[in-house]
Image (cartoon, rainbow, N blue to C red):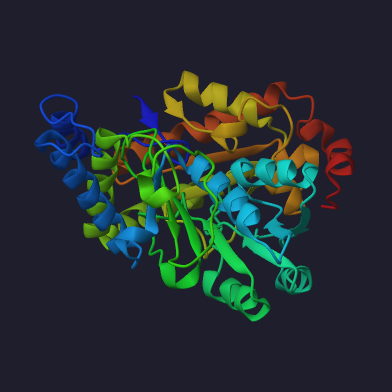
Length: 394
C-alpha cells in the first residue's frame, strides 16, 4: 500500500483544477495583456481567479498580486515594504518562520536593515512579551506566519495585528499552510502570502495580498503587470488552476477540516501509544492536517526512509530544508535539544486522505520504530547517556 502523508510539502493537484486549466494550454492560449479576443479571453480567466482568491480572503481583487510561488510572495512582502519605507527601517520576524522569510531577513540584514527576531514558547506560540518589546516606532514590517509549516501551531493573528497597529508598523503573515484549511482574513494583516500547490492547485503559482495603500516596491520590473507590482506575463493556466483550487477549498472548508481533524487526532492518539513519544506543537491550536511527533532513541531521517520502504511518504520537517543534516530551527526555537529534534516525524494529511490509509500508517509505525531502536546507538539500553545528551531528567 502507498500512502502520501507529506501534504505540507505539496499536494496532489485536484483533477477538477487540472480540467479547468487544460483549455488555457490549448485553444485559449492568449497573452492577457493583448488587446485581441485571445488576450481578452485570457485576461477574463485571470480576473475570475483573482476575484475568487480575493473573496476567500475578504479582500478586493486589486489587492491580489499573482507571483510564481509563496517564496516569491514572501520576498516581495519583505523586500518590497522595506524598499518603499522612507521613515522606518527595521524588520521584526519570529524565529520559526519559513526559510523564505528567514533567509530574506538575513539578506536584508547584510544590506543594512536592522532585524529583530522574536522567540516562541514550547508549543511554538509567539512570545508576546518579546514581540511587544521588539516592535517600535522604527519598525517598518512585522512578519509572523499564520501556521507553522513544520509543527502546525496556529498563531493568533488578531492579537499580533493589534501590537503592530499600536506601533504603526505593517504586518505580514505567511498563510501558505493555513489558507484553504482554516479561515484566513485580510482584516488581520496588511500583507498575506498564499500558495497554490499546498491546496491541491498546480505548482509555480502564488499570490500576495497587499492592502490598498500599502507602499510596495516591485522585485521584478518591466511591464505594468499585476498593477505594477510584479512584471512578467501571467501564468494563465496556473492561475486558473489556483483559482479553482481556492474555490473548492472554500466550498468544502468546514467539511474537509472536520475530516482531517478526526483522522489527525486518530493518528496522534495511536502514535502516542508508542513508548517514549511526544507531540510537537500546540495540542489544540494546530492545523487540522498536521501531526508532528517525536520519538526517543530514533533518528528522523532513518525513520522517514524506513517508512518510505513500507510505502508511507512522510517528512522530518520542512521539505525546503529536508536535505540538510542540521536539526530543525523550529524545534530548536521551541526548546528541544539537538538530539531530540533529530527524532521528529511530520505526518500531514489532505482532504483526499482516507481512514484506511491512516489505519495502515498506525499499524506500521510502531514496528518501524521498534526495529530502528534495536539498532540505534541511543537505544533504551543506553538510556542514561541519552538523557544526559537530551537534558531530560526522567
